[in-house]
Amino acid sequence: MAKRKASRKTGGFSLENMSKKQKQAAIVLACCILAILITSIVVGVVVGGATRSEDPSSQSGSSSASTGYDNSEFVIDETSSAILAETSDAGDEYVEQTVFVGDSNTVRFNQYNLLTLDQFVGKESMGIQEVTTTKCVYFKNDNTAYTIPEALAKMKPRRIVLTFGTNNADGSMSADDFIESYRSAIKAIQEAYSYCDIIVNAIPPVSASTSGYNVDMQTVDEFNYALVKMCEEDGLKFLNTSEILKGDDGYAKAEYMSSDGIHLSQSGLKKILEYHRTHAYETEDRRPDTNNIPKRAKNPVETGTTTPSSSSATPEPTQYTANYYTESSGGTLTYGDKTGQASVSVPVSSSDSVTVTAVPADGYVFLKWSDGVTSASRTDKNFKQNISVTAMFMKISISASKTTVQTGESVTLTASVSRGDKYAADVKWSGSGIDGTTGASCTFKSSNPGDYVIEASVTVDGVTAKTQITIKVETAATATPTPTPVPTATPAPTPT
Image (cartoon, rainbow, N blue to C red; front, side):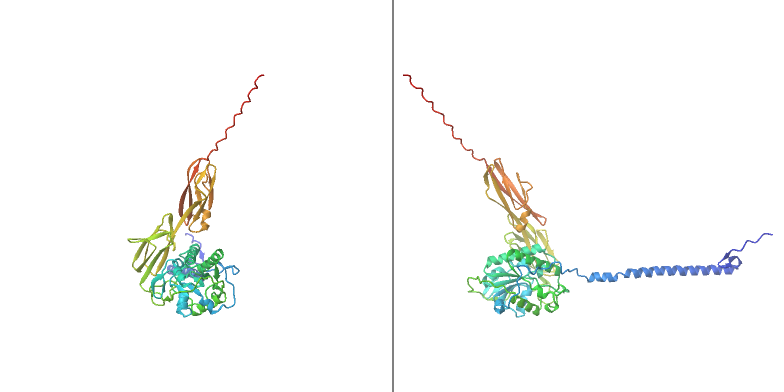
């Protein structure tokens, strides 16, 4: 008789002692328990993963709320000699002798009846690059449109206050280009009427939240910082109205701003006039006369103004204007079959396209457009607002103390760059004996006669301008030696 195998015990009971049905029931139960465990684990992982994916939400929300504006990056030195210090109130007469020049924040002085028509010149949507070319000022009994410098020459103001930059602070213009355009505008005004004092006003701050406009507060601060430096270098005065318009966060105080966050309210403009009177710049009146000053007439009504210096609250129109300008004497524009144009103004709709080409004058090279476009020929389309850009050119010139020298004689060559003296230090010289020389000037000398071509070049923003000059070296005249006298023989004495 065979022996029975020893019973295997599992979990306190023996499977071998169970009936067939009991074994089947136990297997089913085990499978169910295992399925429940697996399901619980999967659900826990999914839910846990979903929870973790939502955890960074607070971090993401913080990032989206951050504007990136650092009001400590471009802090104006309030001890600068260019900044107008506080004075006693100069009164209404001081304001009446001032002409305010600028964009729509200046235009609004008149709209709020704070200044008469004869106390301001300017235009909505105006950027600093337009000051010398845009004909936007009219006078009574005169059908001619005048540029701002031309108009100021007729108005003969005691002083002017310039407020430009809001329309340039959208990221399309660097601080260096902004200052170059500002200097060009001031130069044109001084050439047109040299008898007025020029005060540069700070670009007004904007609100932390703006409606529909792309104006960067960091850029406003950077431009104002650069304007103070420009005033220091050029002997101008700076009216630091930002200090009364700004809050502790660097943005404009709400009580001084309109609802769009860009334009000053009536109380903000009143604050500027008050600040102007209590930070007066009193000098000798240099005007030779104040006779025959014409009365201003209102500008024609403009439409399609949607840039930051537009004060219109009407719905956005479908018609715009594309304005193209050139820097004086640097070149011209070609539009269609029209060549040699100093400026081009084209009415457009959102579906139109405009192609304009900047053509450098002799000796100049095209540098770029004021909005950063580096191609001389540009095509603009899909218009959503007015545009205003200026073609920028560059020229390098060489002057010499003399162009004809003798062998062994030195000559000094000096280079000048139309974009400003600061670029002269980067001029590179090439030619016999001076290859590799860098700087605004160099010295040439040769011991061999002949014609020597000297080249000067400079590169700005990736664009290189070159020019040449020829120095003629002649053989130095050789002095004719004085012949040595032949001694006279003494005659022999005659014998006696």
